[in-house]
Length: 411
Image (cartoon, rainbow, N blue to C red):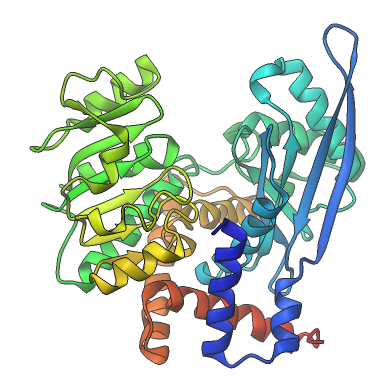
């Protein structure tokens, strides 16, 4: 089942639990606006190249729409639609005043020079500048984009609308980016894990962790978990996978990964088959890479007691059912990886106020939001007698539905 079908399925199950009528359900699913634009730029060799840019704005009942912009050769419209919808539910679970959006450009950033990427970003911004905005739709980095891309969007947008640092988040610190943003998703994963384990009378210290994915989220999660006394026994990334039953030395691994652009060849552990990473023996499994990696083929082999979804949609619905029957507790993506968008919200707030916070304040506020979010999800689980995924979805759909009805928007 693809990401859109799975997201729609979870939405419909939550809608049924909440007793929403079919008209309201339909209006919550349909995107607010879908934008598709042609972006033609001169390349460095003087030839012209044309790319397709798009933005799907899903819902704005609770506030401006929020979501990443990705540069990737295969941008699948269904996937982008699912991710825009997922952002609506994620911001509602986190209880931050946003709706969901997602977008990007169908291009391979590795094949474009820095100046070509800048020209492409500026042309894209020129095409959509009147459809995004501080109180309308606030983009952020995603796959293939980063702080520099946001800086170009900010500059181009400001030519039309005056200096507007709050129009994008994930900016460089020098242009109004927030301290703590880089570690935010990984730190949110730590806070979410702490809340989950505390509920079961445990703490991070002494628990054995396996982390699939060692990019921004996975590496920060590994670092912060090991600082709290967690034992990270195996990690993997695109280059390979390594394991040490006594626990990997995470600071040394981070250094190795930076120097060798991956975990492959690290001497503090044994190389293992990357495909076996999810079924290694551990207490807590953290998928922090791609979607759909936990499926009916491997769900029965998973040995972890807890799964914390740091990636988007890592567990497909078939695996969900198998794991539920086996008593494995899954902390869903729309809560577990919401640290990034929560700190993006803090960045937006700081920009609007023109008053920047220190890193300690950012991290303390993030802990407060994640802890409260877990409590809210648990309350919904008790009200509707459901698992954490449905608890999170009913919480999110209920908040968006209430805002929609209060605004008089229901069909």
